[in-house]
Length: 120
Image: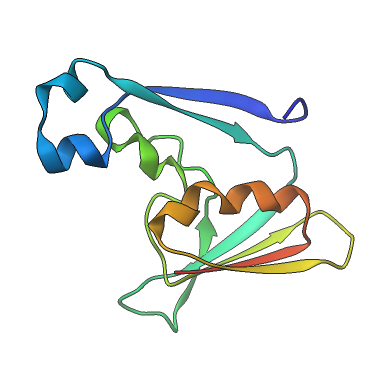
């Protein structure tokens, strides 16, 4: 963690609040804390509606995510597939098969692998 940049997004309510609308949750607003790996990377996404089309410019962290939508800081959305090529040169590759909660885990592997495939 000491090699990563710590970031905080305040004003996060989360899924439990949006499902229940419980005022106690709204009175105890949370934040999303994340750490940006220092490696350089290039990422490509494949949208669920058109999984055969590869789009460049995908981000591991979408920094415009704010407040109640702060969890979308991880990838910005759910994609069928995200391919990540890093500047790590160790010959290692990883594939993560996940649901949306895996979005928060996947970016942290970028520091340890040359290539990541993140499958939703």
